[in-house]
Image (cartoon, rainbow, N blue to C red):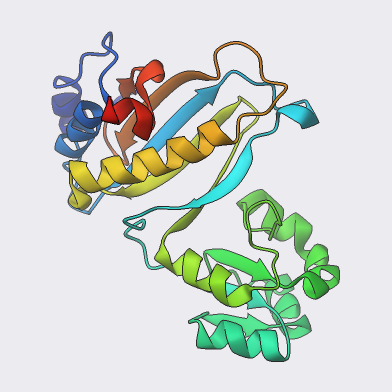
Length: 235
């Protein structure tokens, strides 16, 4: 794979054989974010679990203390008082069967989908559309709930969902390069603390196998997997 000059210049700053402390790695990720747009800083964590087994799934959601830097568009499936509560909380789109029909017609102009439990009979029809995009409401992610107002506020504040892919890796954004190292570190620690807390009882051996951060267009920077999370940072 050929990389551009900016990527190669950034790669020269990173020692690929080194395992960095988190703050230093984030600082390098920011320095190598040299695109003309405000690049997203992403975290990639490989876990010592097997996602093929139901008792080793790792999935959840966390509100990043400094948000994601993205304007999140929220769609809510609800009716009656819950629909009004969602609107009052700042939801961008609210509906019930009509919203389902709209999405079935190809409309997808939203980033997060939230549903009240009584609407899941309708929303279930959208599994093949929302599922592959990671947008299907889920109780584990807190997006199927009676408290739709809180779910909307959390989503707008920077709530992100983390889940294993087929390679047992979690990929998540933790903010923009413009945040700077300190805010990105707070977001990183919030995410890793949540992942560590979600460790399945069936998981054996080393849980955090590897961890790296990178900007959208920049090189990966590897972090010492034994030194992640707020507990390690505060030592």
